Image (cartoon, rainbow, N blue to C red):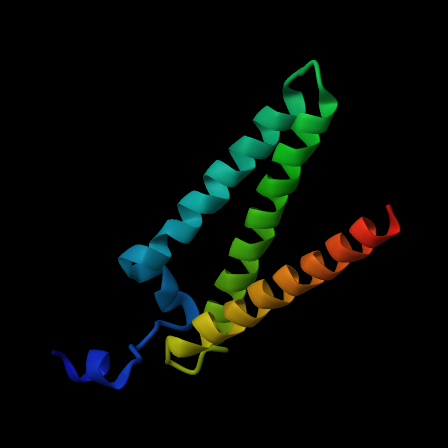
Length: 111
């Protein structure tokens, strides 16, 4: 086992070297295809606009999350370790689950 893998962390690129390694190079493709999705969704006519709104919400959310992660990589906020990503997004996901559960419980109690 490699020493970086044994310690639980790996080195992550920062600055514009993000655009030189394979997994992070996919950020550019995500921007291109994300923009195409927005154009296609906005220009399509659907019988039920609610569906179009949901798809647009998911698309915009993923684009904002990708942009945020790319900016964090470029400014080097990770400090060269991979563990902060899992930790930050784990807390956010857990918080969202808790908030959803609380509001669902309140809605159920009030009905």
